[in-house]
Amino acid sequence: MTLIRIYKINKKSKNNKNITKEIVQVTCDDCGLIFDHKFNSRAKKSELHFCCKKCSNNSITNGRLRKSTDDGQFEKYGSIYVNSKEFKKKQEENCIINYGVKTIMASPLIQEKIRKTCKEKYGRETYTGTEDHKSKCDYKDIAQKAWNTKIKNGTCSKSKPEEKLFDIIKKNFGVDDIFRQISVIKQFVDFYIKSKDLYIQVDGVYWHGLNRKTKDIKLGKTRQDLKIYKQILRDRKLNKYMKNNNKKLIRITDEHIKKLSDADILKLLEKN
Image (cartoon, rainbow, N blue to C red; front, side, top):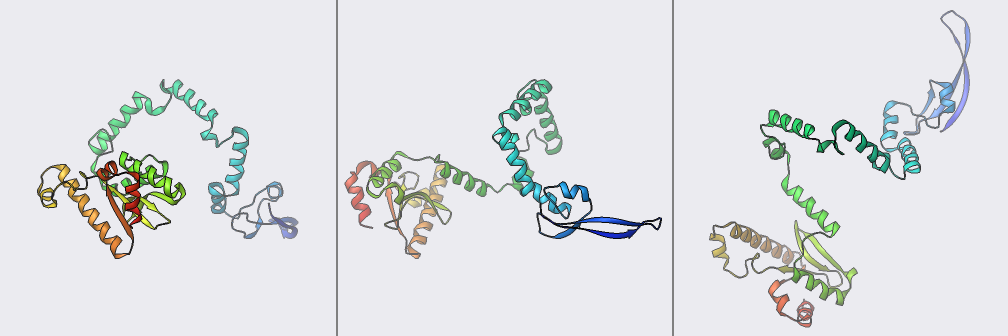
């Protein structure tokens, strides 16, 4: 609370009587505006003052009122109330009483209502997959976010050759010098060694089209051939970008990693 001063003014009432009114001047705890509080007794007792509803709502959303509320909940429950064991237990008990299951979404009645509503509105039992849903989804952005999350959590898929190479370079350069899955022009390069300023990409012979002629892959009619050809184009784009920007990139196949000794792989890296 920021109380500046309390002063009195003389006014005339409707009955033409002289009355003395006490004014409490305070500072808004959100925007800092100095204003006269309308409710004197409340203003004296209040810990926080706000000049308008907007400032009050800001404080409730992400300000001193929110902090005060959160502090109280942490002190009482050890976390925000909706994340506490007490809240979850109470929620489960209410759901069991009302729906016979622990969570509302597990209720057959609720599931049937959702299916019925979706069918009436979108022509199918689920919203996912409808034309409206497809039009609002940026699948590339979704895939990018999913991949970033996997990298952050360390759950992205890693091949055995890639793991073997990681063990080799880790022993020689140290974990802190190696970065994995580095984004370069919206592609991910497997390794980056900071001290050598070197990017390393492990290429699977099959999926990078290294065991066949590109012409044959391009003319192929299978889904695999289409994926492999797109990968070849991405590889060429990355190679061109690296060359034009004077960045060092070494590509090593999964078969080379399997066949070569640790010393031979390190010699290959030292050349770059």
